[in-house]
Image (cartoon, rainbow over all chains, first blue to last red; front, side):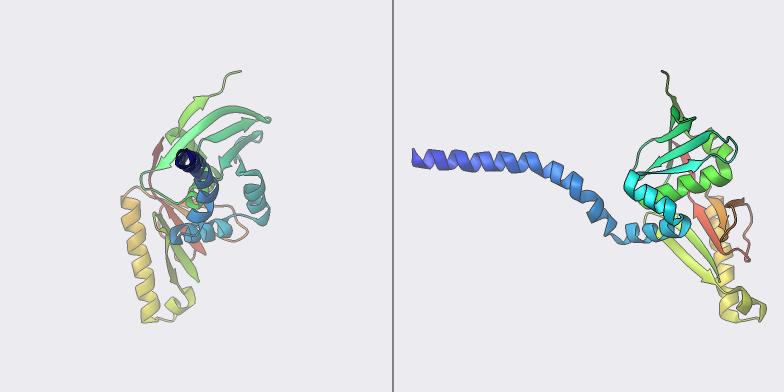
Length: 136
Length: 81
């Protein structure tokens, strides 16, 4: 009986550990990745490219807002980690964009890529991106 | 000093050159700029887009290598995801 109860307790702990580990990995993963050499280099480029205000927005809000150079009421919201870029007009999301490089890039480089393309090459950026319209 | 940054899976590869030394005919500086020009042409041929970044100025897309640029960033070809 005692042995059975010990076995059950051990089994319970194993199940708990298995259930918790993916959640822990999700929390720890960005920090582990940020320690890699490629991410460090990409973060250097990001710091060189963004203003301190933009860096703050990225860290605290989890995204970077880039005003459209051609449409005054349009803002592109680029997430800190991979995902869709939201296009907002007058504060409302009108579409989501998906664009990726042919070569894998660190997350920080992805932010720089979106920023450079939106600011200096918006037309091509919009042509190349897959668009998902948001209908209310 | 000018810098060429090429985005890749390793972060970004960098190459620097000294514009002033080039004007004085410094062999090392000339070799550095020739290498930067070669990489620029090679990446552009692969479909990369080049951006010129100068402090206090708007980002500019460029087609040709410009040794007077403060920083040139090469972004790999992009496709809709």
